[in-house]
Length: 84
Image 1 (cartoon, rainbow, N blue to C red):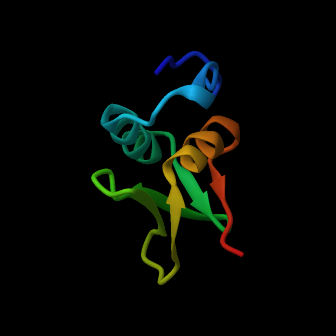
Image 2 (image 1 turned 120 degrees about the vertical axis):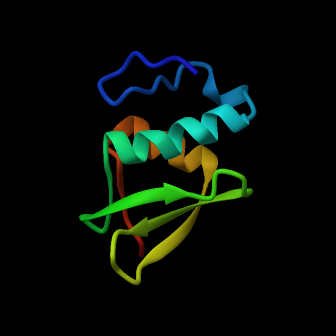
């Protein structure tokens, strides 16, 4: 995965590629180093060995399961997840 945008992620060519374990590892690491939010509260991404990522707020009860392609898109855009 190429890291050349403001958020550290390039989506170029991602539509046809499978999500690799390294991609998942990178997203989890970026969630801790660059930060993410869930409903505007600080959160982290986990579940790097799972089929779906878990985005959970720090110290709070809220968590959501999200597909890895969705995680990559949100991380490339604004790192802000929302639970409906």
